[in-house]
Image (cartoon, rainbow, N blue to C red; front, side):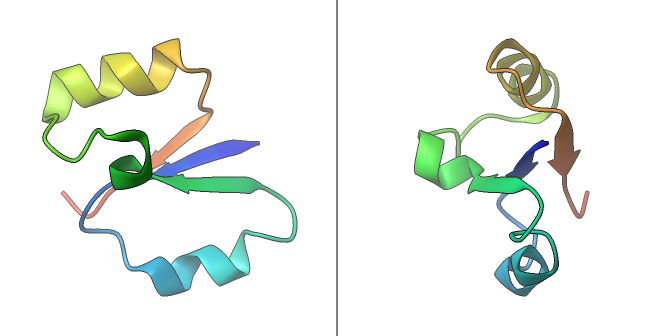
Length: 55
């Protein structure tokens, strides 16, 4: 499963997922400035299964 962490998501959560899932941060993809709908559209278009956010 492809998991995307939004900017506010604590990195420490990744350690619970990394063994079973591919975890990427939005800033690693250059998406740190995208908000709400645009971020969701990019996430979906890139094939991510889950977006984890604190919003």
